Length: 254
Image (cartoon, rainbow, N blue to C red; front, side):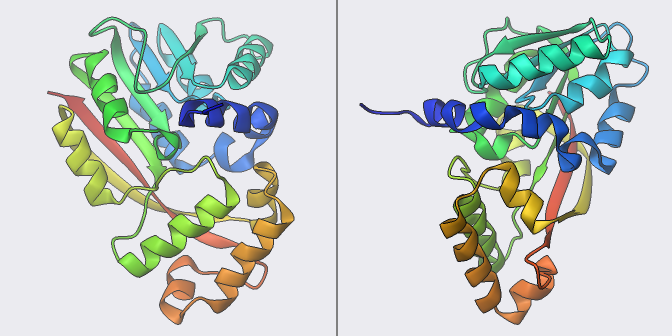
């Protein structure tokens, strides 16, 4: 039986949903603070959390807007979000199962689109961005935050390889240039870029995705053999922990 990428992602993440709700990397961070500030004061807005995962963007945004629709491909993730929102008394969060490339919403249904640590899993990133633009009102605001690949091919190749070994649902960490070009083609105008570094603790990073020991060892072997420019850029430590480049892009729908 043929399995689509969407099917694979659902199967892969279903047993990991709870880990993403409790993940320290996903539940906190300067980018999450930025997203909350981005929506603050928008009491009448309807917001879409696209690729919501563990729901951390939704939880931060909900007190500031009229409604948040937490949308994800994986039903198990949505069940966790629904339960957590209820526990926190966030009654204006609703969930919707859908792929980013095929959103079941009318044109211009949202005032705000938020997307964090999701696009690198999409089967077709640009199709997802076009859908995000379609469901956003003209002049509506969007913020996209994700891990990004360094521009240099040496560094890019190292990152994509360890990401795929760690998580077979990984598609690509796009570069800042790829992000900006794709957003422009999809009808967005970038209004602000914030680059950051996030420190990833190796054991926690691999445990969250239940990476098999064989692939953990393969990643550690690649790190051990990496050239000085790779080791320096990612600040790889003896235990395999390293720094990941991230980017938050604020944009307006043209």
